[in-house]
Amino acid sequence: MAERLRPIIVIKKKKKHAEHHGGQWKVAYADFVTAMMAFFLLMWLLSMVSPDKRIALSQYFKEFSVFKEQGEKVTKGGIGILEFKGGARSPGDAPGKKEVMSPEKLKTKIKAAVEANLKTLKDQVLVDVHEGSVRIQIVDNEGSQMFLLGSAKPSDKALEILSLVSETIKETPNKIVVEGHTDALPYRGGETTNWELSTARAAAARRVLENDGITADRIAKVVGFADNDLLIKLYPNDPRNRRISIILLPMQYKYTSDSFNR
Image (cartoon, rainbow, N blue to C red):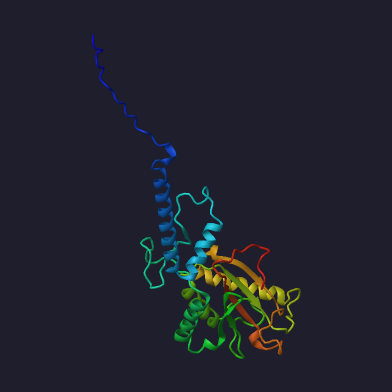
C-alpha cells in the first residue's frame, strides 16, 4: 500500500526588530528641533529689545524667587520688559506705566525740560551722566540763592526748579539719591556746622520731591557732604559749590547701605 502523502506546511516567522530600532529617535529629534526653534526665536526677540530692557530682564532673573514672585508679571516697577526698538510695545504694556530710559536719553529729556521751562534759571541747573547715573545739580549763583543764607528752607527759585525736576522724572522708575553741598565758608550757628546744614538742605529737597509726586520708595539715600565735594575745586568759596544734587541711579544698580560709592 502506497504511503499516504502528507501536506507540506510552511511556517513564516516575522522577524521583530529590537525596540531600540523603533521610532523613539524620531521623538528625540523632534524635541531637539523644537528646542532649537525656541532658542532662535528667543535670540530674535532679544535682538529687538532695547538695551535698558535687557538689563532689567537680566536683573529680574538674577533675583527671581518662585515663592516671592509667584503671580507677578516678569516686570520691574510695572515696566513691560519687551519694548521693541521700533517703538512698539508688548501687549502687556499699558499707557501710564513707568518707562526705563538710558542715561543719555534721560539726560536729554531733563535738559530739554529745563531749556523749555526755566528760561531765567536754566544756568543754575546742571545735568550730566556721572558714573552711569544721571546727575542733576541745582546750584547757587551770585545773587540767586537756592536756600536762604544759613537756612534749610528752599527759596521760591529752588521750589520752581525742584517742581520741574519732579514732574520730569516722576514717570521713571530709577532710585534717587539726594545730596546737599556747601561751600568752604565756615557756618557760624553755634554747634551747627556745614555738615548739619548740607544734610538739612538735602532732606528739605527730598520733602519737596515727594510732595511733588516722587514716591517715597524711590528715595535710596539722603546725605550731606558739607564742603567735601566741591563743584568748583579751585575756588572753595564759589557760590556754585552750594548746591543740591539729585542722582538717578542706573536700573541695574542694586542699592545697599554699604555699596554706594561716588
